[in-house]
Image (cartoon, rainbow, N blue to C red; front, side):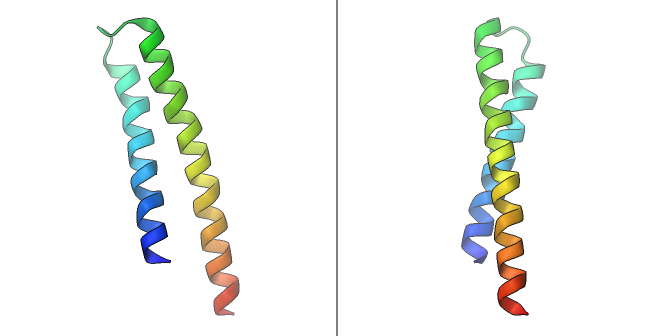
Amino acid sequence: MVQNFTYLAFLCGISMLLVVGGVILTNLPLPLQIIMIAIGLIGGIFCFVTLIRVLIKHNTEKG
């Protein structure tokens, strides 16, 4: 459980860095910026939904 949570939190961090990097690094070509932001958003949404599901599953197993 803790290991899965750690990996998901790490994925969330990478996704946020991709979004921030795509916004801040304005000297990169525009298609690369769009790809970075898109991958960051998709990864972030996947990570957020999966984290919520893992936490709900963990709480229902306890009770």
